Image 1 (cartoon, rainbow, N blue to C red):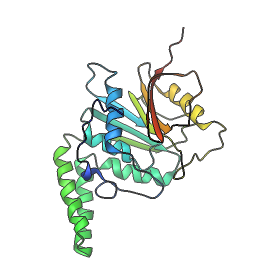
Image 2: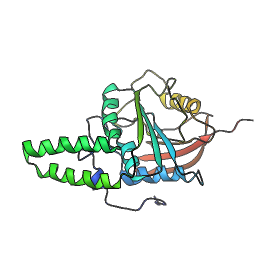
Image 3: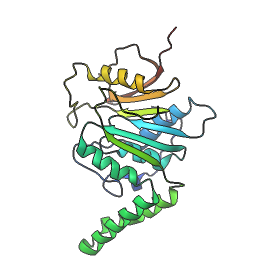
Image 4: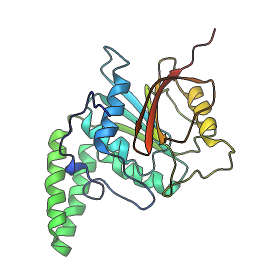
Length: 235
């Protein structure tokens, strides 16, 4: 795949479990790929300088947290997941996009250094301090529990929706929908504004069958693919 917007940098400071909290059952997402997809979405808004971003299948919030650190044009993040446990982890991770959240995480890591003296904790503190220098301002975040195949309680319509939907052996849909992917697209269409851009990462065998969204782009990367959409125009 050709990367148009994200160089192949060292993203070690953003490794899950270092500063950003990791948790079982929440797969990580490649940092470079996540930034590339997000920036392809922002390119569809020429002249726009700030964005509200939403992930309806946020898991532990890893993807959104990475995007918040790497993209200074994000000023608000909304995140939801059907799992209360995942929502709790996502809230902790998105809090890292504030000075207060980073200060609290540094205190945790410093306590771990005192207790265990591990070099990994020392390296994590060094990563945290670099991330703090990179954070130009606090990013506002809202995290809540919701089933994305049902009505979504969003106060405002997001500019960009980006999500890595359940597939494979690590995660699965936790509802009784016969076609949860289509149900999600339908609910997201109702939560969007007329210019909202939707980016969905999925297994390359998964397909969206519906008329709410018009596909603008499709890219296959190994077993994954991502598709970018805008709302379908109605007469």
